[in-house]
Length: 197
Image 1: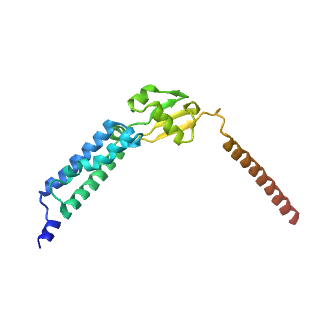
Image 2: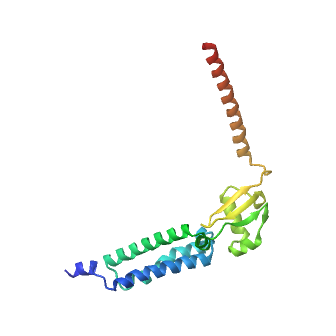
């Protein structure tokens, strides 16, 4: 019967089992907010390593000296309830929402790189270019606007005068042809419909 007790019996007081995950949760929310949006965006391998190892680093702080099934359930339920409460509070209070989630930051505006925003977000021009290339841009010169959102994702808007590459031009030309074919088919169908009436 020892295995039964080891599996379900808490080896720490219930209050401690509840407080530990709450404290770690709040610490991580504040820490990630201070670290900036790039931690959420995982723009380089170092940031990814930090995010992957944080969970292992704080694991013992959350569970303490208790490996029981009951302790794990109490910790998980506590984290879920705290998260639900924080999300509810954040969405109901715009000031807290602005602090926790941050605001959208312009990295490029009207085709001009905002170096101060890049510095605030700890993003180099190379990292911005890498993100732009992942979104189909060959150069930062093709970007009218780039913003980093509260969740760390970077959005891009192309300059209107940028010439698209040959494949895109071929696709656009073919779409134009198809559009004209559809128009002529509609006209034929309408003409046939009038003849039969």
